[in-house]
Amino acid sequence: MKAAVSARYGSPDVLEIGQVAKPEPKVGEVLIRIHTTTVSRTDCGMLRPHPFFIRLVSGLFRPKLTVLGMDFAGTVETVGAGVTSFKPGDRVFGMSPDTFGAHAEYLSVPEDGQIATMPAGLRFDETVICEGAWYADTYLKKFGLKSGDRILIYGGSGAIGTAAVQLAKSYGAEVTAVVGTRHLDLVKSLGADRAIDYTAQEFTKIGELFDFVFDAVGKTSYFHCRSLMKPDGVFSATDLGPWYQNLWLGPWFSLIGRRSVIFPMPKTSKAFMGYLKTLMEAGALRAVIDRHYRLEAIADAYHYVETAQKTGIVVITVTPEEEGRQA
Ligand SMILES: NC(=O)c1ccc[n+]([C@@H]2O[C@H](COP(=O)([O-])OP(=O)(O)OC[C@H]3O[C@@H](n4cnc5c(N)ncnc54)[C@H](OP(=O)(O)O)[C@@H]3O)[C@@H](O)[C@H]2O)c1
Image (spheres, rainbow, N blue to C red):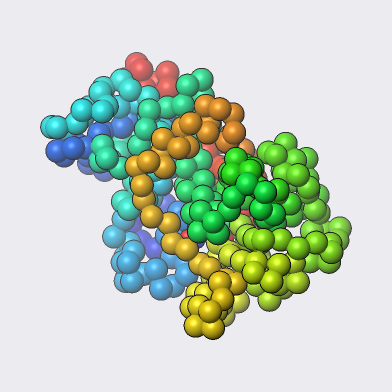
């Protein structure tokens, strides 16, 4: 099968479109013909690799995973022995956070993994938002966000940020989103109660206090944002922050009996896929798609995602649905 292969670490130029063995679904697995996937910041981090210490898990000198890609949407081709909840022809979406592999024509995933049948009425490219939503929801749940809470989401325009704004609204929170000028209307359309342009004003000087401050693009810090936080307010960020401070501030605050900074790690859960599907079908969570690329041009997609300028997600079309049907 055709796949985007990264046999070594490096810039997107190391990627090659080549032939690799088509996976066979093992017992309890579902083989999916991929129609769409994404290039995410996680894929970019795995390719370089960045930060350097992820080599400890991704492979010290060479990548253990040579086909990246976490989000997928496609059609079930075959199922392994014992699979009962999917059958050939089912339209499915999901993510493969442990083994990646979606930058390829086929992907085999466990039936009890992060896979669900497609939300009714949506196209494949409109469902490859699971990774961003997964991270966003991890943070919102760890905050303990509930109806009526006030949350400031810094950087509401990326994959995680666009999901965070919508998910926070679905929790019933009052959402203030901080974005650049070109994204003000977008975040309002996603449900933000208020949008602040970080290029036009210093967002920490708006004179309001929040229960939670979530840096969804890793561009600010606890120390910069603490004037925005209520005395028992909590800060979190998707990145490690200057001097990896988000890793050590959490434990340090715990030692003195406070919860001012948290840095949660996402955990996989089958139930999450059902939750996303329900939100998507209700129109409470939608994809914000910046660009589409064909698999053959995936290196260009990586280069673009690495600019940190994308809005929402960048979609890769592996096999258009019509071609998949004729194959
Ligand atoms: N914790 C984890 O496990 C994990 C997992 C995945 C990703 N991440 C990290 O999470 C971050 C977000 O990923 P993503 O894919 O959602 O981001 P992304 O899509 O790359 O974010 C890009 C968006 O951020 C905006 N932006 C750039 N600079 C900004 C600034 N200074 N202030 C506010 N907005 C700014 C850009 O628009 P403008 O420039 O026009 O404002 C653009 O719309 C990344 O840093 C990534 O490394 C963490």
